[in-house]
Length: 262
Ligand code: PGA
Image (cartoon, rainbow, N blue to C red; front, side, top):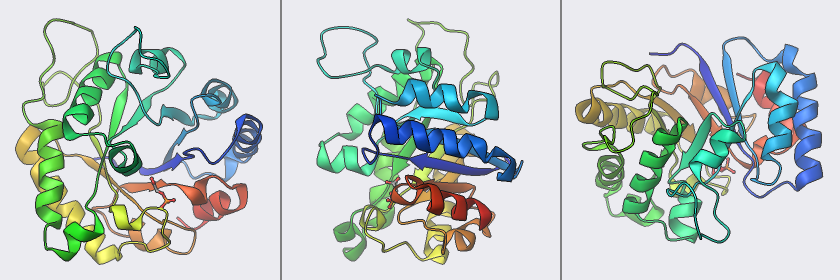
């Protein structure tokens, strides 16, 4: 298990090209104030990804894709493949983010196809799972999460048709991190963060399920209305390895406050 704190910033569609580059350069300038224990990755818009990556390259901050297509190349207007993101300098890719699942109707099957393509491309997927408010009210939280995790990871084997040299989870050969982001849908972008004790309980449940399915102990991040004021409450729990931050990461002052409060 990693003793690093994962601080992942999902800029969503909050920032345009210039704003993204200005923020990336400002963060790069403050690299010295980021503790060595922090592993930081930024997920900018596809448009700004390359230049943001250039700004962050020398300060050890990774970049990742917010969304990927599962086919490498072809007639898929408007899509960008995992392979292309890898070529552009990404190390990570978000997959199954609740905004993709709910606003763009992404299914568990599509999420799974994306995970396989992301792994084949040599990127590390950050697999997002979370229950809706209705599922929580109907006592279906655990089953909703279990269904998403099983669809993402059950029998996930290295496709033999396309051998690559990258290692893979649980194969005995690799050291790739298996990263899950627990992001309750009702907590994302609402200001209504999940109670840290409840997040801890969910992280324990997710960990058990992932270990049972893959034999690998996952890194689990919490996401959903993380702010400077509440970040420490999450990180003091050893089962919470880090956070995936949306709106509070797309602003220099709040991002710096988050860093100083960890
Ligand atoms: P939020 O978003 O921090 O704005 O709630 C988190 C996320 O969507 O990853």
